[in-house]
Amino acid sequence: MIGKLMAGAIVISALIFGAVVYYAQVYQYYETVEANGQTDVLLTNLVTGEPEPIVYDSFTAIDADSSPIRYRACFTTTLSLPMMTETYAPYEGAEPRLAPDWFDCFDAEAIGDAIAAGKALVFTGQRNIEFGIDRVVAVTEDGRGYVWQEINDCGAKAYDGTPLGDDCPVRE
Image 1 (cartoon, rainbow, N blue to C red):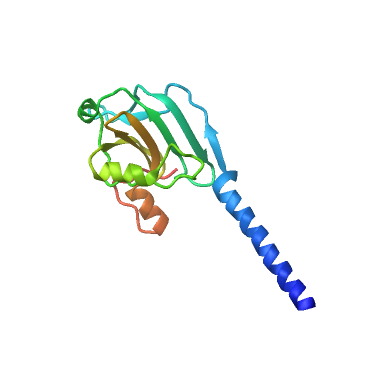
Image 2 (cartoon, rainbow, N blue to C red):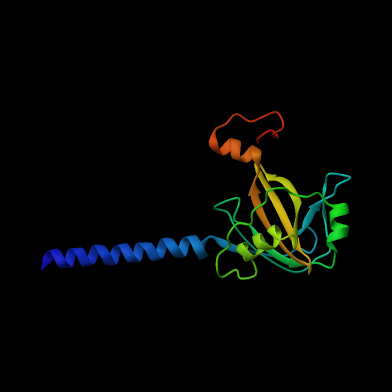
């Protein structure tokens, strides 16, 4: 009888611990990012190489201090994709990262499918927003936009211990 009680207590404790860990990962660390109306959506200009704000609306975003790649945002824009491709730097190899289910404007699978089908284009938002992390912006044909952060080549090298190349910025 005591063995059953102990086994039951262990199972209940494990379930409670699992629920706490799940809540912490999916809800606890995320915070809503307040839009400032100026620098929420930046794209890197092809001519200057500098990030600059674009026209956007309906901005909503989340972020967490626990990881540099937890940033996600959604917005709309009236800019056309042909104009954007002539003005802003593309970003190669971007793959949208999953967002929590409750942040329903950001569907990484649908965004990835739109990119693969050529219905969305990916632009460089800001390189090395922090060391080894680039902010990436994807915009669909109908003006819906999505922002997330990617680990760049320098970041991948730094995290796996490979020596950094000369093309990597100085790590602060």
